[in-house]
Length: 269
Image 1 (cartoon, one colour):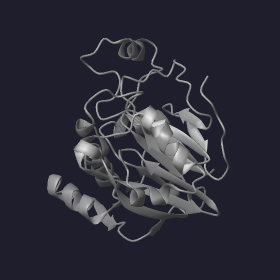
Image 2: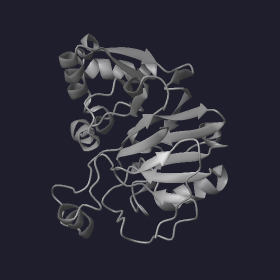
Image 3: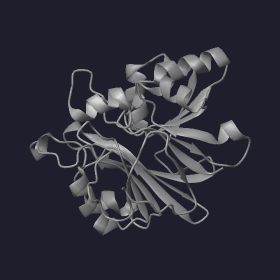
């Protein structure tokens, strides 16, 4: 098995919003097609001794329920994109799992992200090793390259490009207004996972932090990945709708599994 599983596809607040009775939030409560936990993915490298070759990207506040959804009791390795709560809020629960199981977790992140996490949770080091990704690393059989990307009003995040056996894909959940140098590692991809919080966001551009779907399609015209999955979506996005997205784009659903190593060509109905 060599695949990616979408554990969550929501933005920072998730869907449904607790205060909201819009059509999307209402549907999410009733039938759950639009129910979205905070964005995270599980990668199964398909080599080695099984669980040790699995790793997750990001560990938000829905970590525990995401693990239960997949019938998992532990993932030993995490790769973190940035230190915002929706991406690290599950670390105390992960640390507790490490403590009870008597294992040391492995948390990989850029050095400045590690420093922020350690400042927020100074006791985590008792239960995990912090490993820097400033230089390229190998994880689960993948060569992993990290680089800083613009997160708009929210500062910065990091994206990851993963290469293995001639197959390349990238995870870029929190980005907007990428400059040429930030886009360079996103060229030549077989697959791209890209954050798109809205279909068309009307807020003033300087206040925004993630691409919307219209802007993302313009970016994809330049990058030309083999296939793209949109994630990190707010309650503006209704998965029941046809947004007439370009061919080669799929709106990711919670629990969706995508093979890594072969192209999975899908379109939205």
